[in-house]
Structure formats: structure tokens, C-alpha cells
Image (cartoon, rainbow, N blue to C red; front, side, top):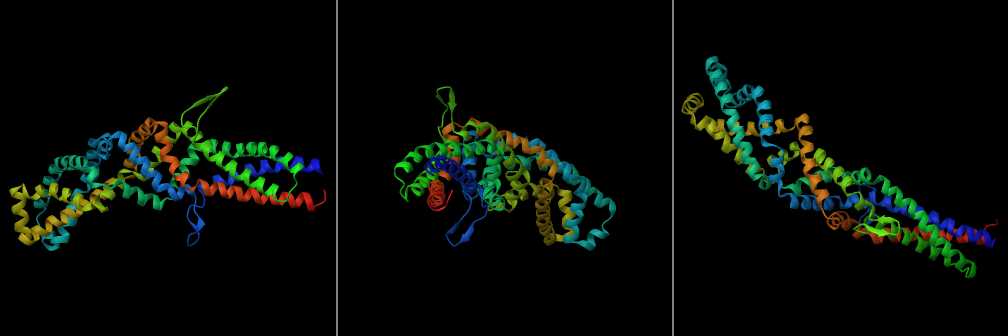
Length: 399
């Protein structure tokens, strides 16, 4: 019976080490949404801290790169100009019709075709220069027009599993390795516990030993991910935190997902127009539209004669509103967003890879540091439960 006990202790300890490490990983990712009542419950560490980690990532990368304006310049503003012109030109006559039917439908219906065509042609001639100046203005003021942290917060609230996917895609092998090493560490600790149980078969010993095994294996699991910060040579092995060792891969995955899902051209444009600083964006659009009517004596006279002074003011307001709607439509083009995403990804990825190991660790570790004691205690509790079950099995069940 003693032999069975001695053999079972390290086996159970190995199982406890494997299970508690597996549980710690699962509790890091799940549940994505909080489950519980009041403050009693749990939400995965990574989903709960996703916003904090994303903000640190963006702060770190933009701090090294410059600012959002610098990223915008990498997007090649001329490409944006071409996109706007190619999308708006085919619909420009339609936009003008919609504005005029909103202001003066009867008059516009009765306006001679040659007069309408002259207005259409003049608008098409003016469009490229207006768009170029508008895009240039946006590029100079993008940091003031877009609250990037508010944009990230909103998107991460809608996609709480976003950081989960980054960790899983970039570190699937490492996470599996952490779980398996829990079994090895648990087995080693169990081998030390077995002789103690042999000499001191106290009822509390196996539950206490199980708690220690669960606590320590979870502690080791978390530290394996983040420590040591820099590569160290131990005998024949080069040792470094598992996720730190994969910094380039994590940087690539992070940058690609951010560029494809969070900081897309469409979402930045939406944040410019509908975000907290949207009034500034609308003012810039209005500034560049005003010359379409005011700088042409013929167009101004035609508009004032056809719609009157009051209607002329309303016409400018309607044009401004139509331009805002057109801007939203232009940048919602999926093909254009897919084409520009790799440019943003390249910028973010390059900066993530350029971070020093400690800076990279400071992006990921703070979220875990706040929760790791809880994860260790959960591992310890399950280890103690396994030890208690083992004690009752050995003492009260016949073998």
C-alpha cells in the first residue's frame, strides 16, 4: 500500500501541474464576457485587460514612429486622392441632383439641360483640386481630428476577443508548452512530496502539498511566458520568456489584425466625422467646399438667381452634408481598405519589432501582473482539492 501511495503521489502531482497550468491558460482567455453576480465572478484576464494592452501597444508604437500624421503619410495621400476622385466622379451629377432636389425640386426640374450640364461640368473640373487640398489638410491635422484611444476603446468593446486571437495565433505552441511543462514540474514536486508522505502520513500533508504544487506550477507557467526578459545561456540552452522569444511573430500578428480590424481607413474616417472631434472635420470639409460656389462669380450668380439668397445659404449647408455622406461612402470601399491595410500593418509591425525586450514585456505583462496572484491561488485550491481526494482514496478506499 505504501508503494502504491509513493507511486501515486508524483503521478497525481504531475496531473495537478498539468491541469492547473491548463486552467490558468483557460482563465487567461475565458470567459470573454464577465460571468457572475456583482463583483463575484470572472472574466478572462486578456479580454478584461484588452483595452489597456491595446492602448499601451499603440502608445509604444506611435511613440517610436512619430504620430498618426506620420502613419497617414505612409498611406500615400495621393492614393487617397485618387480613391476619392474615382469614387465621387461617377456619382457627382447624382449628388448635385440630390442636393438641388432637396433645396429647390421644382426649379431644378425646370432648369434647362444646358444649364444643368454646365454646373455638372464645372463641378467635375473643380473636384480634383478641392480633394487634393482637403486630403492634404486632413493629413496635417489627423492627430487632432481622430481620438485614437477612443476609437480603440469602442472597437475593443465590440470585439472583446481581439487580444485573445493575437495571443492564440502568435503563441499557440508556447501555450501548449507551458501546459505540458506544468506536468513535468508537478511530477518533480510530487517526487519530493512522496517520501514526506511516507514518513509523515498526516491528513493535511497531501492537500497542503497539492496546494503548493498547484500554486508553484501556475507561478512557473506565468513566469515562463515573460521571463527572463533577455536571452540567457543555461548550459546548452538559450533561455528567454516564451512570448518575448516570439516578439517578431507577435508583432506581425498584432499589426495585421489591428490594420485589418481596428485602425482601418473606413474606421478612422468614421471617427473623424462622427467622433468627439467631428465638428473640426466638418469645418475643414466646409472650408474646402465653400470655394466651389463663392470663388466662381458665374456659379454664385446662377445659384443666387435660381434659389435666392436664403436658398443659397441652404444650398451650401446641403452641399456640406452631402460631402460628409460621400466621404463615408468613399472610405467604406472594402477593396480600398484591404489594399491600404498592409501599409498600416507594416508600420505597426516594424515598431513592435523595434521595441526593446523590456518595452515589449511592459505591453503584455502588466495585465497579468494584476491577476497572477489570483491565478496562482486558483491553481493552489484545485491542487489542494486533488490532494484531499488522493488522501481519502489512499486511506479509505481498498486497492
